[in-house]
Image 1: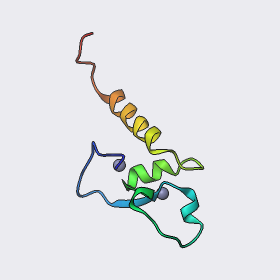
Image 2: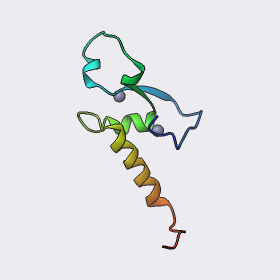
Image 3: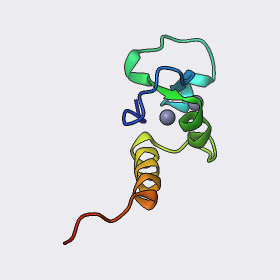
Image 4: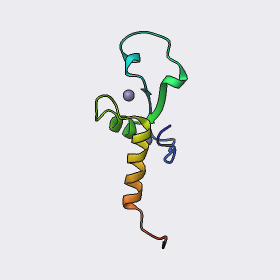
Length: 75
Ligand SMILES: [Zn+2]
Ligand SMILES: [Zn+2]
């Protein structure tokens, strides 16, 4: 899932269709067509149309993590 870095069991998980076409009607849904997201990530993905791709969603989430993280590493 996109938020693998927050695998909290108490978070409600939802199924997100990667292919918007799959929402148009009944058809076979393959496991590769969906992603399991927690409610927060799923809501974030749907803040744009079409939904934010998982790759960018993950980047956004990581960016948020880094924004709150202290810069402990000297470079
Ligand atoms: Zn969705
Ligand atoms: Zn999440």
